[in-house]
Length: 531
Image 1: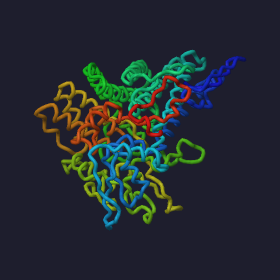
Image 2: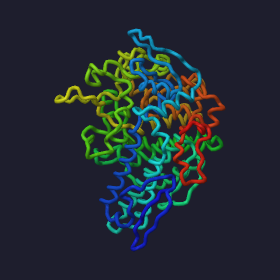
Image 3: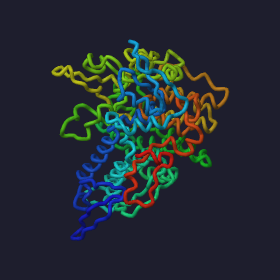
Image 4: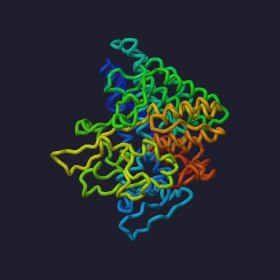
């Protein structure tokens, strides 16, 4: 799948590029993998490339509330910001309080593919089109495959414990890449060999994830529950991260492999109970939310860590697209400086969506995470959830920079709510309520009042995930795997059954994926779109 020039003694091996992937410079075979420092350098490079891929666009928005149509752009933002709305397939905009003469509210009831494609093809700022390129994930997968091969062959300077830990971490990174791609594209090309030169067809996504789950089961015992070094908590693979990823994979497969859904639900609840019993993680109260959003907290299972301290020319992977943080679209002064260029938020959530999320106005998240939460006025509405660590440069007060927060991927709250959902699907409503109430209690809400039927608690858990994980890139995926994407009750712009079955929930795959692979097929639904 990757073309590598590998030096082994005096022999040279080369191959025609498969998937058009450029080799990673550090993949130089035996000459590179000599000691733990070499392995650490390679692993750091893999995490850095994942950070780079994630932050080239507003990934959390594109896989969350932008794509589902719950976020609408401000009229004042012009055409660039309007792509937020286009990604959700509508031209709806937040009203201009000063009475703009621009076209304003034009709601639609189903996703308009033309508008989504406009957002993907024509926006250099939010750069949504980068999501259609999957080669970057395969570069990381290739690096993980080669590292696994070399460590399994044996590196004399590593102890047995070090070798097992590095093998487990490489398996986590590889599986994470496959999970990202499955949720974006559906079926993917799957391989685990270090030097895959022959082209392969796409494999059924359920099969891919089941292979990843088996891989992670083998890896789990060889990683600590969490990192003892606070600087690595959440940013390096741990047993908690592996468990969280396995739970997410099982719940995804449950939505697409109904004949085995009971097995997936059983596995999810077992993993959830194991994670809780470990005592390695805790739910932080809202008074400590700034710690969670800053990163490396006791609630973090896995994140792509960002800090302004590393955002310099010597660290290219920290050079995130300024539009990549979800918060960028929903905050203005005083959380964004200077005031004269940040007098309104670029987008707001629809009043209808906020009402669905927060029927109980006593929910502590309303005060902690929002300003004017039910106001569709972009000059007053703000989502403060990712704005607590605001940066102001006293020497350059006009500097335009986002708050200093991490990119949250998996949190303890995510795992607890997946466990609650799995219990509800199994019919164990009492166990589901216990897990649901763990989150509600931390958010200032009374215990769930009990359900007359399973549909009521299933909906309660779905909406709890929607509000607790708001802006963390999970919402659209939740809609897809639970099939709620088909129902206007849950989403602004639902898909029809026909579109869903033809793959409208996926992202287009750029035609560059066809290079040198005669078995490759693009996503049928998007063929003919010019990507």
